[in-house]
Length: 125
Image 1 (tube, rainbow, N blue to C red):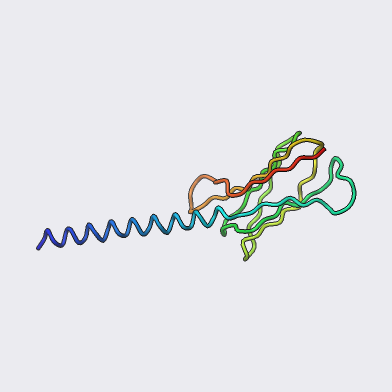
Image 2 (image 1 turned 120 degrees about the vertical axis):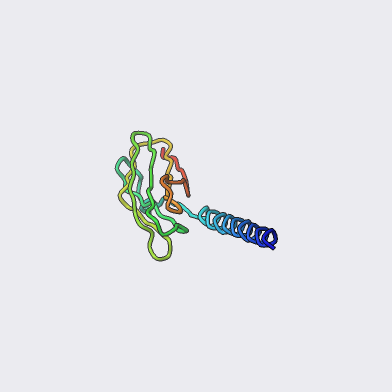
């Protein structure tokens, strides 16, 4: 009887681990649906110092850190997503012609490291 109880307990523990892994995997998969967009003011020429907005949706309820690699500098800003999981950060500006990479990071599941959850890039001439 003790052996049968031990097997049942072991089976329950294995099932709990499998279910936990599936739930965690689903949460991580959902997180990869975050978007990231860059919007410049409509009309007019984009010159040095032109402000632009970095926005997106699909973020978890944790702070989002946006990092912009421009031809001249690396800039960053952070924001908590709104109730819909969206962000909109407007304190970035162009720094001359070249390639820009924009990345969004979040600390997921109480971890100690931020993960890349969205990325985009653009070129200015």
